[in-house]
Length: 57
Image (cartoon, rainbow, N blue to C red; front, side, top):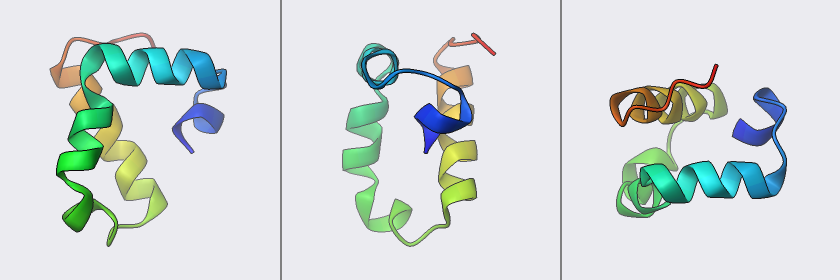
């Protein structure tokens, strides 16, 4: 979903998620995150990335 919204390749998305800790965040927060809607999760990931210093929008 994040990849499509931001017109990224799978590799680029993975690299961003790995570099900024999104994969770990999603794993650690699975119990709460999987109950949320797609739009909410995308916004949450974008907020998380901003906090971590990613600003490539």
